[in-house]
Image (cartoon, rainbow, N blue to C red; front, side, top):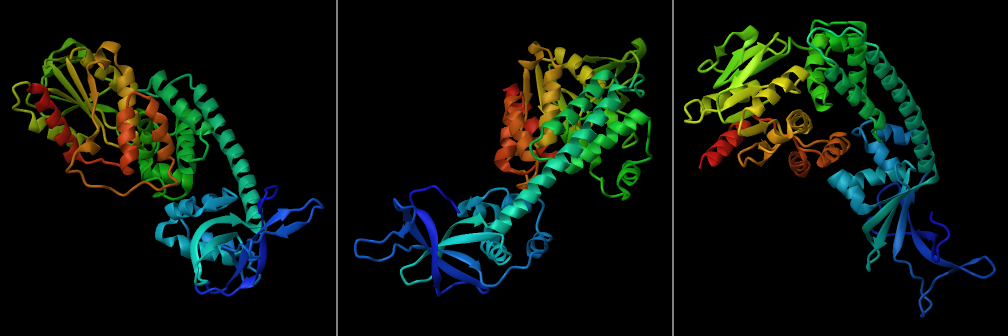
Length: 453
């Protein structure tokens, strides 16, 4: 209840209105004004009638103290924080959050004694449109407990993340194929989680586990073995590689603890590989995979155009589609978030190109990949670089939208100030990822065709 205002809400008697949900009562909200003697007077019209245009819906019987936890046990992650995160929520905000489920859920929350819902009263004395809900004394108590638990969890996460940062800082001998820049990017990902306003619990656990395994020299036989060792369930972290990619962690670090094979770069088209000063033209061989850490590997681009793609199937499709093009481009496949070695090779090839096309998936990981590639280039190469948004392809299939509670929204917004801002903006506008090989090939082929005219 709001205090200290000119018109203070006061509950009148219970009123029987058509449409009052079962188990609830409706009480008029009467406006009052404070008198000079400290008492309050009910505001009336000039004709002496009460100015009662709204009612509050309240539980008809004493709520069960366990009702809220039982209700929220079946809700999606983040609903508890939304419900308890503000003393007052406008109905438009509630409707936006819960859509067609808003009214039914609000009534359950009233019965649980968590919120009071205020509604308009129609001319024929029925329940009208809701205007807002506000937390009851019980709801505010739950909110305090939630905030206290959040603070404790944030402190625990901060300790975990700092210990993980300290552990990798003490790495004096790096695993084969890893350089200090790769470890620095993991440290940046850990530091980012420490600054996040809302914790991403799974991502924190993954990053900490990766850092600790690197520090201890632990290598697993597979992604599922990694998951089993840290969660006692082999399937909990089936998406570990994608989650690490979305965090900006180089794939080579995941490979170092056994989440996938050795880091490789894929090369196709008019590119000559020069390992140990031996010339190996790759023309006509498709996408050729080469260990990125190959000693003394030098790459020569014999084309005006360089295309970078994170997906092997898409790289193959782009290569095949442009194989007979009079100005065949060089194609680089970098297997997700590129390592320091792969970024170095991309930067070297980009210096030799007149036109650089970066074509990642249109999602958070793709935005981070595009930014990492851009930042690895010289200013001269950056001026010749185009970052594609494959989500603009009209033929793409809309995928499942991100949850409103997903940390992806916050992370994409943070990327709006970076070099891949246009791609981040497109992802935010769509609200779902686009990671389809056909769209990558279609976007790149169309762009190459326009440049040729």
